[in-house]
Length: 141
Image 1 (cartoon, one colour):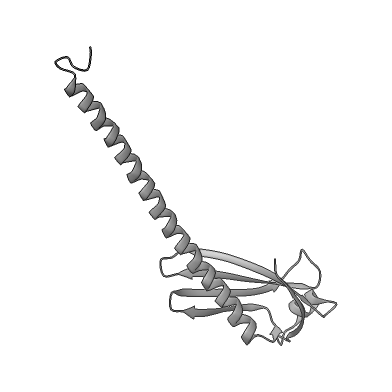
Image 2 (cartoon, rainbow, N blue to C red):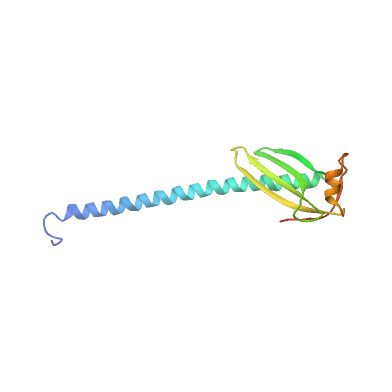
């Protein structure tokens, strides 16, 4: 069939329509993926904001390390922290922060705090009066 013959316009038009439809569907998928990535990035940034503000508030309000848990509330979520003995590294306590936003999404972060006491476990485990432990060095991991 040559282009000037009768009946060639409809098949060429159908091929162009199929090509345009495929391109449109592809662009819709690209848009949906980009939109989903932006939502996930906003969620991650919100949780990171909660974690960092929880850490800052904990550091500002804590001058001594005592084992236990606590909560901080923020307008877009809450942060729960717990201080425990770190049995993996000697003379350290592990501070774990768990952020939960209004949508129920959760992110956890921790760091170890080195303390001056030679027998951290004895002080934390054997202490009945919740004797505070002085912070020597803070190292982030």
